[in-house]
Amino acid sequence: MSDSLNDLKSKGLYRKFRVLDNSVSTRVNIDNRTVVLFSSNDYLGLASDLRMKEASSKAALSWGTGSGASRLISGNTTLYTKLEEAVASFKKSESALVFPSGYSANAGVISSLAQEGDLILSDALNHASIIDACKLTKAKVVTYPHCDTDFVKDYLDNSQKQKRVLVVTDGVFSMTGELAPIPQLCKICKQYGVLLMVDDAHGTGVTGPEGRGTLDYYNLNEPGIVQVGTFSKALGGLGGFVAGSNLLIDYIINHARSLIYSTALPPSVLASDCEGIRIISEDSSLRIKLFELIHQLRDGLVSLGFPVFPVPMPIISILIGDVSETLSVAQYLWDKGLYVPPIRPPTVMPGESCLRISLSALNSAEDIERLLWAIKAYYKKGS
Ligand SMILES: Cc1ncc(COP(=O)(O)O)c(C=O)c1O
Image (cartoon, rainbow, N blue to C red; front, top):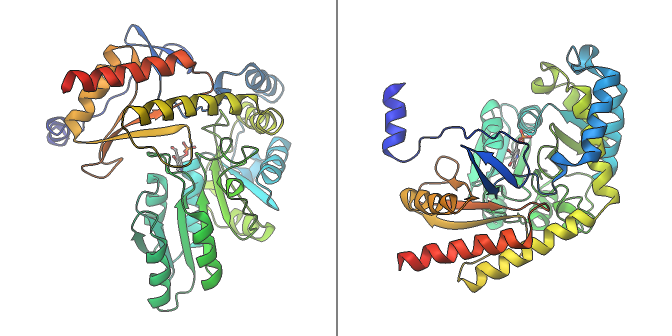
């Protein structure tokens, strides 16, 4: 263990917790100082929203703090029914199923859908929870080059008939904020009669005209797509979900081990998750504010010479490449009171270390100005 930790330290890849002693907002106290946070996935600031807190505390007072058992035993309350109906309606699907987390949703859904003799085609930049979920199956897993839809098509064209084929992609890639080519993948999957699964952890609540996610952004209404998501990001809570047909949900309830063998979520969490969906469905003001900030940051970065992806998202990453250089920029920003996390392997591929800036509707225009000023100052200092 020591050798392994020393090895990580020598490569600049050692990680340790930072401890916050106030709630996750955009001003957080870490190591006895207050910094502006640019690292949370709480894109709309719902995790500290009074409406969410009230929903959560009310449920805890009337239902208690724990659920006592897994859902198929006695942990399945009407709070689940209400939440799953809300998710299905939000995602325009027939049905939905809530899991303890997004990680366990991916584990449960992928391991239910793919078994020995099946094939999974997975994007090279998919989230670790998808990669781990693929490892849980005995299916053949082929990692396709990032967003390379020609590769997917050619592979399906040339491969022998498998029992079942699952193409899986993040909707919005978690480290770069780039959108996946869902319409093209959807077309290919339909042509070959194979399943498409989209993990829209980062699109849900943010993108599309009503914040419903990536499929809505693309105006795709395809009931056959398996939609996975999480409450832990824009929805300001905890838990994962899958949305799709009644048949799909029934099948997953009966096969997903991460659902069957894990205790149901506590009432307080289910209630605030439900409130998160209600707020996003009825109140677009936070999303509007978020997008103003996103545009301000993108414009500023472009004027400093940094490239940005065509579709605005609250995740904007600056590719640096080298680990020690990435740590050095992050440290410079930290010294200026700005917390932008350095992202290193194994989260990204070697040579692709980056700064991952994530924005919240609770950030201010001044926060963005400060960040842009500090980035500019760092690069001026270096040149
Ligand atoms: C794309 C993606 N899928 C799944 C997850 C896991 O979700 P959760 O944090 O709810 O377990 C994350 C986030 O960590 C993610 O970025």
